[in-house]
Amino acid sequence: SVKSHENFIQCFGISQKPGTREYIMVLQYPDEGNLREYLQKNANRLDWNDKISIGLQIATGLKFMHDHNKVHGAL
Image 1: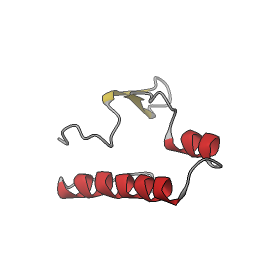
Image 2 (image 1 turned 90 degrees about the vertical axis):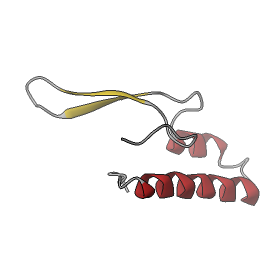
Image 3 (image 1 turned 135 degrees about the horizontal axis):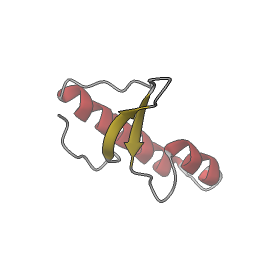
Image 4 (image 1 turned 180 degrees about the vertical axis):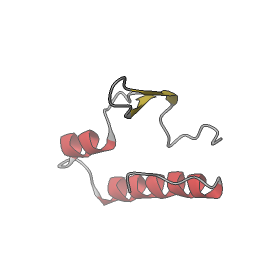
């Protein structure tokens, strides 16, 4: 399993919806919302240093996952 990492939110568990049997993940909800919400709220305030920092954090998190033989399903 992948241990905790500063660029990941916590996964509390996985379940299935009765009837549809779709999988549901119960995740920590960040104070600033998800990345899409954060970027939409702050688009006019982010300078290039902020944008580069966010990109590097994403790349660092993905590298950590790949180093542990995990993939991100929504990319």
